[in-house]
Image (cartoon, rainbow, N blue to C red; front, side, top):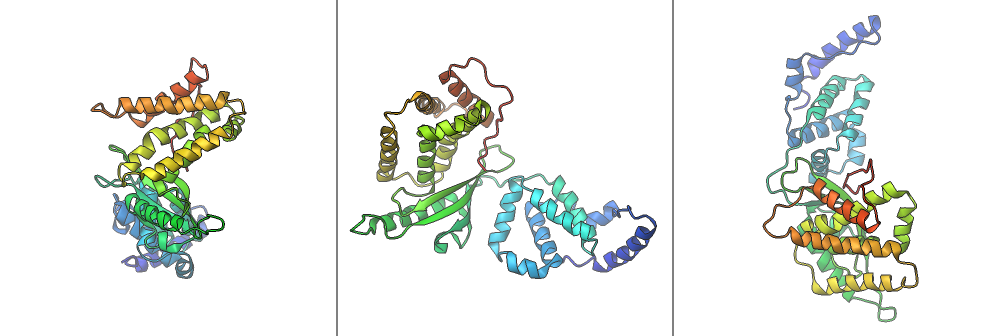
Length: 348
């Protein structure tokens, strides 16, 4: 399918070489109808993924076979990238093909044009997805690497329960544990592009699945005195952004993702709350100015969330960030917001 224009491109190549001899800086750009024949002007996500896969295999088939994971995993990974707006890597790769000045260079140049004009389209009622970047136990995340978040969350909950129950009687430690590194992709209603963030969990520790462990990690960061002090040392503006991200993750993003998954197990929730409490108690002798402010931020955020759980319209992501930022600033005794604060909410 992708080699239909090879004959034409060979003729074009010969003409370009002659032009290059006379005009070294000349770059051939095919006419619009020729570009349209190569690739449609408006390409869907699926069409772009297929085109990228084909040109990569044709450009260097040996490297392609060595490095590209066959089957649906690669297709899903590229689709998630494109729907998240991550086209820079693919544009850079295509530019390398253009610079090679080979038979595929013209086609790669047209595909760059199509990628830059691409506007992500998200399926209606798209569920949050998770892509497993790496897992010590391949059976948990290797096939397929890309799954619905709800499905993988259920699997990790069950596996965590089984491994945590099988403990060494001498040490009371689980005999089997495994780390999993992943990227979560999700979109709220009205979003034109996927949000995404990376995470890591330890399966077999008794802390449940993906969502439960992400909640525990986030709560720890919100209340850990040493970690908060470290973040404050980076400067007030960066600290403000850090707290806004954590607060929005705790109050909005994780509850939203939880709504697609099974209800949290009571035992896991209690264990998580106990771990957070024990860590806080171990620091009772430490001055708590920063910690108290941040615990207050979390509590105020919970109260703010309760106010919007009725029939009222859910605030936009920007409105939520403004609420979080105001809460943080009030607890720090600030009357006016910091200028130039980065309102990005992505945890990459």
